[in-house]
Image (tube, rainbow, N blue to C red; front, side, top):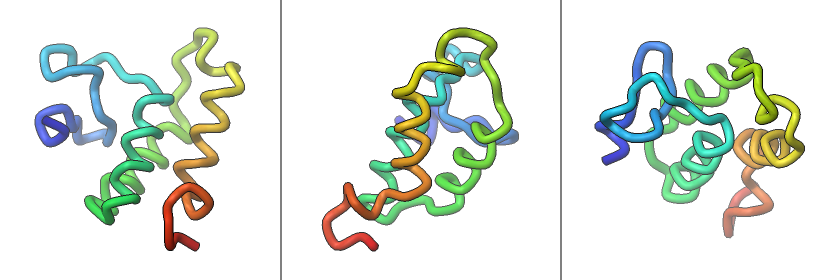
Length: 85
């Protein structure tokens, strides 16, 4: 399913396959952490982080603290992944 939800370019996971234009930083960061936990698709993890570093939705998600917490978790997952650094 994740492969069907991958939108490249630019490099993010859409909300669902029938909605390729819908993207949420929070959920992409969660997917990123999951991929890192199973050591899968490191190039997609990097592209997700790069995309959402610049992307702005221009709604409350841009300033919601949890979005920024998830960004940090995606960039620095070591504390959340057993055996991570």
